[in-house]
Length: 114
Image 1: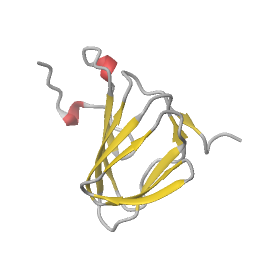
Image 2: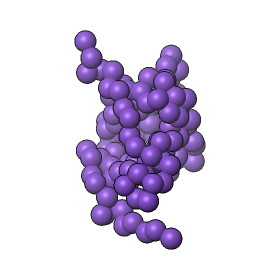
Image 3: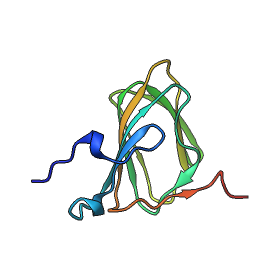
Image 4: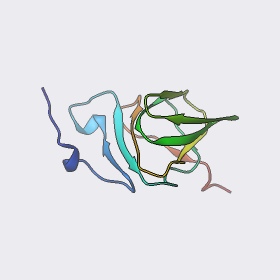
């Protein structure tokens, strides 16, 4: 068994991040999101699937040509190679678990190009 405290993980803007290859070679990366209203990443894509488990709040997800408002209790699956982003559209925090089906993060930021 391998146990890691959330507060010991690296922190990004509004999340703690577990990189699987840094923790015994686990085959996934996990982002524990706690985003304020209006928060969320800009458009990007990965060469692997990503699964979002929304635990609290609501958000607008954009994946390819699709736009969808989701809320607590829903799971969003974005296929590999699909440009996507989300934004907390609620008045409180957006708490979710993002699972990257890869032992390391591999992100191409689309908005930063051009």
